[in-house]
Each structure stands twice: as structure tokens, then as C-alpha cells.
Amino acid sequence: MELSQLPLVLLLISNIYSGDTEETPKSTVTIKPAQHVFRGERVTLRCDINAEGVTSWQYSWYKEGSGNAFSELQELTFSPVTELNAGKYFCYGVETDGSHRSHRSNEVTLTVSDKAQAVLSVSPQTWVTEGDPVTLICEVYSSSTGWTFSWFTETVSSDYRYRYELLSDSSRGAGGNYTVSSAALKHTGVYVCRAGRGKPVYNTTISNSQLIWVTGVSPPVSLIVSPSRTQHFTSVSFSLSCEDQSNSNGWTVRRYTDIWGLEDCSSLSGSQTGSTCTIRSTTPYDTGVYWCQSESGEKHHPVNITVHFGVILESPVHPVTEGETLTLCCLHQNTTSLNLRADFYKDGSLIQSQTTEMIISTVSKSHEGFYSCKHPDGGESPKSWISVTVSHSGYLISVLHTLSSVLAVSPYLLVTVVLIFKCCRMRVASVEEQETAI
Image (cartoon, rainbow, N blue to C red; front, side):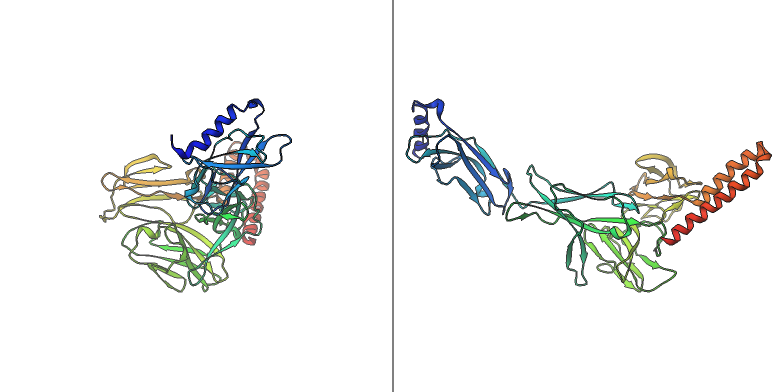
């Protein structure tokens, strides 16, 4: 036995043979804000002794591995706490006049980790349509509790400094969710979050950024990609141009990538001329979301661009309308052959094998999903999302087709058909007027 542990042993022997073991008060250790904390936080351990009529105690704190008491205060505070403070702690007390002693307290383990990290995710997805709900989820990956959360929008100034603006309707509550029940175009942007706890407040690092896009039914500007596809090879060039029939000036191409974050299209590998941006000698770092942005900050028509070496899928840049024809091809970087046979997949399932192209003659909403292709020798392409929009004219044609079948059976329904046809035309006209107003 080490001599340094002798005082503690004598205390325990004294407790056992004091003659009043049954009445020996208990000691309890509590810790705030949590047993698992992060370097830089303020941590307080408190020793409480349950004994009626005793108001004055002399406390002793012990840490695992040390036989000597290192503090006689009721509260033990580390501010700021470091990894050196981690370990197991317990306490006991002796009444000032020496008439009472407490039992040794429960043992509490203090865990100290590096700087806390906030992690942001989006549910159900980062691409939403006007009116859909979207939720930002902020988490601190540890067993610790007691956090409050804040959400910010992230912008980049002309000198490439990141700025964070607290959401005006962001509640600093205990829950880690921020929900927009009905998304609007104004909610398009880059978001981050942060968590904090304690007094004074200890804040986590700013989280990873998440881009949320809210798309409207009829965007006023179009993003034209040349070559017109969402996937591109490495070491080539492609261009993006903003086209607005009412105003051809004032639009620039912006982008968001996982590597570089939010930036102008021309920040690194591109060059901007008017509303056109050209990316020369592409690399996988150019993979990201590209959109048109006005001088006033309006954002429209986002497009997901993927840069990949080897095999890519040639798919349309913009959504396909119901009733149209969809053609997909598989391209290989090291060959110019137009007869490249490949397997085509939708949502991970094989739908066509060893064909030069996949053609869907009449697209419907059920064809919406993630598509990719695989070449026997060249490998597999990345996945591209193909969106299908509802066609009002297609809806009308479907109604007329049904009515023509009815007419073939009963010609006497002609008057009814005319009335229904007029109602359908009025409905389509009303929808188009609403879209124009939006």
C-alpha cells in the first residue's frame, strides 16, 4: 500500500468502527452541465451530504489514482475544463466539530472531449417545391445533453468572407429541429447551425453547410448548359448561361460545391462573361449545384452538375414533361463510339441491359427517379435525378381520349361532352393564369 493512500484507509476504518454505522450520512456527487463535456466548457461538481441537523461540513475531494484530498470546498469547478481534468471523482465530509462523518460518495466519471461539433442535415430532402415542408436538423454527436440550438443563413461577401445571419424566426429552444411548414422561394439559400449550453454559454463550432433549393412552377430565367447534360467528363470544358426573355442583363452564374462552398462560377476554374460562365479543364471539384442569380439576390433554376472520369450518363438538364419522350445514353471518356452498349438502372434496379440507348416514348410521373448506366469495361456512371412535371395539356388529352371512347358507345352524349370540354378548357386557362401570376 502506498503511504499516500493511508489517510483514506484510516477514514474508511473509522467509518466502520465508529459505532453509529447505521446513522452515517450519505454523500452524493452531482455534475453540471453533464458528465461528458468539451474542452473549454465550465464544469462544476457538487458534494451534497444528507444529514438532519448538521449544517457545517468540511469536504474532501478525491480523484482516482490519487490518495490525497485536493480540495475542501463543497463545489469543485473547472473553468475552462481540459483533458487533464478527466477522470473519476468522489467526496466525503466531516462535521466541523468532528462528531459526524459521511460515507464515501458515489463515483462520477468526467469525460472531456475535443471541441464540440454541430452537424446539420435536411429532411426530407434539400430540393423542395413551393408549399412543401422542409426541416433542418441540428445535432451534437455525443451522449451529452442540455444544448440549445440556433440556425443561420450563410453568405459570402465580395472579398470571400463568410457571414452568418441568425434567422429572425429561429427559436433558441432545446429541440434540434427548425421546420418551415410551407417553403417559399425566399427560403432558398445555404444554412448552418450551432449549439450552446451553460453559463457563460459554451458554443460548438459552426456546423457543416446545407443548401436548400425551393423551386417555383415557372421560373423567370433559365440556366442553359452546353453540352446539354448534367454529367460531364473531367479535363473538358462546358458553359452555363442565364437566359431571361424580359431582361438579359444583371444575371450571373453562382455555384455551391462540397469542397469550396458558396462562390461565383468564375472563382476558381471558370471565367464569367456577361451572364455566361465557362468552366475550362473540369475536375471532380466542379461537381455541385449551379444557378442563376440576379444583382438583387434572386436565385432561379438550380441544376445539379456532376464531373466524373470514365463513364457518364447523358440525361436532360431540365425536368421532362409528362407525355414527352425521354432518351438516355451512356458515354465513355475514351471512345467516341455512338454504339456503346450498356446496362441502365433506375433507383439501383436494372431496367434495360446491353443497349445503346434507353428510350421511354411516353414519360409519366412514375418514371421520376435516379438513373445511371454501367459499361462492362468502363465502369458505372454517377446517378442523376430525372424530374417529371405534370402537363396540363396532357391532362386534357387524357380526358378527351376517355370521352371519345364513351362517344363511340353512346353518340347521344355529345351535348354533355361539349360542356365537359368547355369546363376543362376553363380549368386549364385558370391554372395557366395562376402560374403566370406566380
